[in-house]
Image 1: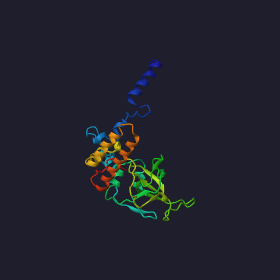
Image 2 (image 1 turned 90 degrees about the vertical axis):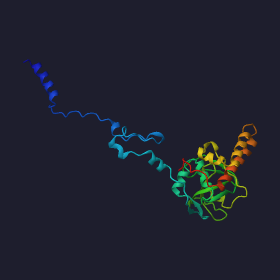
Image 3 (image 1 turned 30 degrees about the vertical axis):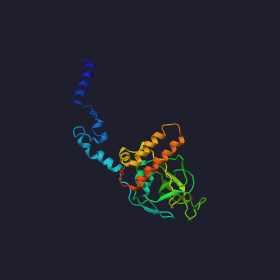
Image 4 (image 1 turned 135 degrees about the horizontal axis):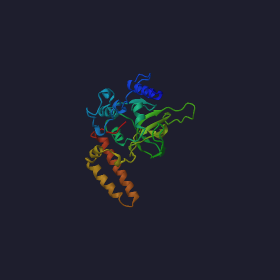
Length: 266
């Protein structure tokens, strides 16, 4: 037999018998077949047919995700600072001040919550030292806030002492759901005669919250008055109506326990 024909026969035999010293190439494995299925939106769990059995133990259900993310609102507090402010748990306060939670603010300000209310002793440019939003906010004299944390004064720096001997700074929650940090001397625990409040962002409230508020005739009437006043060019009239609307909501919140628990919360 011709030499070239022998070489061709050897190659054919080697391929057919897979006996030439190399291991056979393994069949490709589909990545999708071993990974955990994605959680479908709107609480729809993957069907049994589409979810592979080998990954079921690693799958987190939508209900479990919701339960983890939706911790209940705090109902107890701890005492901090010289003035013994009653504040939420430190971890909760940090999450609360990471962004604005207007619905949560209404619930925490509502009747029966144990957290300490404070009032501004002057106009203040507020800031957030808790790691959340860093944009400055203008707080007005006598504005009502909720104390959520106390931060001790830096012993290596200049220590400002309040009239009652208090030092350091406080993180406080405004009625609009945002947090700001203020110095100890910038707040008092004595209730202001006519407390002011940060404007409540109506459009950002959840629908169940809006429905509960609109069930109060005073809130509904003040909303209609605000919309009418702010539909023209009179800025002063609009501002006045906005203050009245926020006041109506605050009055309802302070005397009612009927607000639904917010869906979006720390």
